[in-house]
Every structure is written in C-alpha cells, then in structure tokens.
Length: 371
Ligand SMILES: Cc1cc2nc3c(=O)[nH]c(=O)nc-3n(C[C@H](O)[C@H](O)[C@H](O)COP(=O)(O)OP(=O)(O)OC[C@H]3O[C@@H](n4cnc5c(N)ncnc54)[C@H](O)[C@@H]3O)c2cc1C
Image: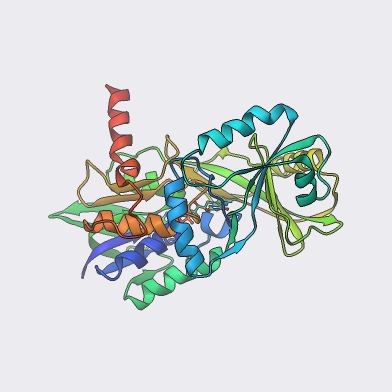
C-alpha cells in the first residue's frame, strides 16, 4: 500500500498534523518509542502564554487559543513578568516588542505584585501582568489529536523507529530499524529534536534544527504554594515558576545545547534554579520532589518550520516548535495541513502568513553562507 502521507514522530506536532490530514488523505503515523509523547511533548511546563516565543509566534498562539479554549483544554492562570527597579527598561521593551500584536499586557504596581505573589522579596517591584495566560491540559490535547487520527483511519505504528528513507518514481520508501518498510507519496518530518537527522536519512539538506535542554524541578515549599498563583517569569529570562497540585514547578529557563537524546536533568541546573528562586522569594523550600528535562528544538531564526522542502519533492518540514509547540499546536497543524494539501486558509489560519514559516527562508540563507 502507498500512503498519501507518512508522518514521522507522534509527539504533539506529528499527532496534530496526522489528525488534520486524516479527513483528506491516507495517513501513516510512525513513532520510534513504545508510546507517543515520551519526548518534548510529555515534558512541557504546560502553559499558554501570549508572548512566549516572540512576536513571530504570536499569530500561531492567538489562533490556537480560541481552539484550545473552545475544546476545554485551558484553565485560567495569568502570567507575571517580574523584575527589579533596574529592569524598568526591559519591562518597557517587552511592552514595545508586542505593541500591536493583539496580546494584553498591563503594568502592575509593586503593591499589586506583592498581592499576587506572596513571599516575593521587596526589591522585586516591577511587574507586567498578562491576564490571558492559561494552563494547558497537554496530555488531553495530545490524546484528542491521537484519538481523532485513529477515528479518521490513520494507521499508527509505535516502536517504529525510522532508519532509512529513499525515493524513487515519486514514492518514498521508509525502512524501520527492524526491517519493516512503508511507502508514501509524501513525508511529514515531525521528529522534534531529530528533525535534521530525519532529513539527512532522506538525503535532504538539513535546515539547522538545534535541540536545547530545559530543566524543571518540582518543589514542596512552606507555606504551600497557593493554587491561584500566576505563572511568574523573570523579565531577564532567568527563571519561571507556577503552582501545580500544591507544589511549585520551577525552571532556571536553561537552554543548554544538546544532541537529540532522552534528556535528563543535571544537578547543577536544579541548583541554579533554586539559587534564583531564593533570590526572588523568601519561600522555604522543604523538598525538591521531582525533576525532569526535555529538549526544545529551534531553527536558526527561532521560528517554526512548516512547509515543503524547496529542494526535495514530497518532503514536508513540521519542526522547530521550540518552547511553544503545545500552545501553537492547533493553528500550526491546521496551517500545516492546508499548506501540504494546497488548501486555502480558514477561520483559524486567516491571520497567519504561511510564508513566514516556510523552509525556503533557511535554505536560501544556507546558500548565501556557502556562496
Ligand atoms: C521543559 C519544557 C517545557 C516546555 N514548556 C512548554 C509550554 O509550557 N508550552 C508550550 O507550548 N511548549 C512547551 N514546551 C515545548 C513543547 O514541549 C515542544 O515544542 C513540543 O512538545 C514539540 O513537539 P514535537 O512533537 O515536535 O516533539 P516531540 O514531542 O519530541 O516528538 C517528536 C517525536 O519524534 C519521534 N522520533 C524521533 N526520531 C524518530 C524516528 N527516527 N522514527 C520515528 N519517530 C521518531 C520521537 O520519538 C518523538 O516522540 C516545553 C518543552 C520543554 C522541554
């Protein structure tokens, strides 16, 4: 059998793309691990934050927000970017960066900040409030897409690590590491940290997707973190924390270059996170109960890459979802499917320019550099 599309990788990117393609095409979804969601998708901090990823990502985030809200995947949280008096210019720059993008940012007084974040140290006086920020039910959203894909006839194969890809007569032949073969007219490369590796297997020039490790530690603090604490982010990118089931999820906002791998947290990054946390609050840390790390994968310009490779027929990039691959998933997958199928925009994608995310931009840059 020749599938219309083989999607490689069943994290949030591949699952959502498979579900969006399924009404229009015969789709195969291939996942290397025993179950989908083991890598970045299963390790996220689970927030939807309007400015996260920068202005170029805002259209995808806002367009996804409506879908996530309507389908019950969001729980209001609110976000606060915080700083000290010397960070006033950084606060202004954050507001200016997102002016006119449609996001809501309000300046808060020091008193209002102290009210929203108990135990914040008195020198932290600057705050920007982003009221729309919400928690995302990541597992629910991932299962929503996997379930839709199954119902719509997508064949899903786990323990199916792709090891070879060749193309002849307009058809890709994909070989699994245990010798299985599948055939498809088009490939969607949704392999997260392994996206460049998949391109190389197919003889396609990589676009430069680079994985970076990010760490999260789960703290038990005394007194217990209130459930309505906002997501609190350092305006200078040194930490964020948010409550979850009476605990605090804390990240040092690390971005350590990594090979594609099963990422594990390093003690030093947990220590850095705690060091920064005690500089911003006087909460007593009773225990570090859990920690994990995952890979966030970026293109060189930190925008995602959606579209057909300009140099390889039938090879579609759906990669570089960085730190925003969950919150942008609904609009990204709808857009990706429309571009792949040659369909026009709909209500979700009407305000998104697909050219901004096309892989051509990265290929022409590589040519310019090598010239
Ligand atoms: C600590 C952390 C916090 C984050 N917080 C947030 C957040 O709050 N909000 C947000 O929106 N985003 C967040 N992110 C980012 C988000 O998790 C990612 O952008 C998203 O999960 C990427 O999804 P993906 O499907 O591209 O990658 P993955 O989930 O990594 O999926 C890629 C899949 O491809 C498979 N694969 C690889 N190679 C092969 C092969 N050869 N054959 C078959 N399958 C293969 C892998 O096994 C994997 O399952 C966070 C990430 C981390 C690490």
